[in-house]
Length: 418
Image (spheres, one colour):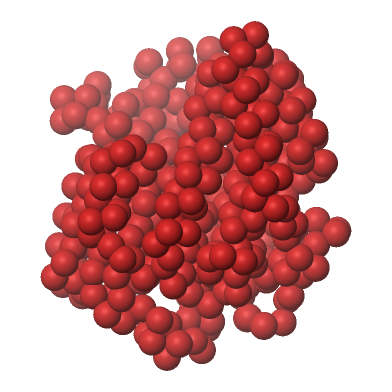
């Protein structure tokens, strides 16, 4: 939730100058002056224009970083109609302001936003009355590893990422779009957390429909400074004069917000049904959060002081002035479901690395029958409705259906950290 004006008020004007974030991303995180996907967009611009121009587009979860970036990417090819659905009413308002305030942005005459959940009856009414939609993209998902702290949070995650996804697919089979895209995550490859396992199961749900619908998905890297991300949180901490907390041992692949929308557009419009796309990034392109944090403060011309604990960092922040080094606490990761590195595919995947300049494609995603998927969902719902389940029971059931799921349980949650 954005801060109110009064909450932004500094204690002693200690807030540091906020740097040019897009420039910082290009220079210090992705280290790319141009978009990774620029060449593939240029090479396929005629196909993209043919598939998008004048078409009716529905984007679910379009107020988030990736969904809104997808919208900006697809608007460059002038669709005839754009409907955006998201539970975040404030986010939809800001999306509209952003689109309407950009002199270079094309916005179709029939542009509407709806603050609603895509699993609610009112969404179904809107979908049936305002369709058909030629292009449908779903970005509504629980995406944080921190959202799996107990059985209630896990149930909510699986409800959103899996159950509602299947219900929506059943609706789409009766009203087939030309293209359907559903976002996944790198954490679905050899998942170690329930969030990754839920997205892996989501992949298997959509793959079971891939013979009936034109369906694709994409796994991709962390989106630098995306809503709710660790890096975006730095800006909030600075505005509130609070210390920075960062894992010292975690490294990730990164794409810019613009690139996150572009990979989803390319996967949605160019992929064959049942394919999983991912960015072609070399292992050496992964970056440690600690290094990014240090670069962030260097770019801001502000020294830091490394604290030995979160308590020390919080106490130091109380007396830090704008002339003092900023308190930062680097810690060793010890929370459940945290992977120290990223991967987009496994050794058993058949991968096409040749068709696209910047994209790899998994060609042999497992395709279970809809009956098998329904049986899995019935088992999960039955467990959750039993009233006697716990987090371990859900994890064990997921392991039965996802052979590569190896949950890492430490008994600690990210919500226990700053």
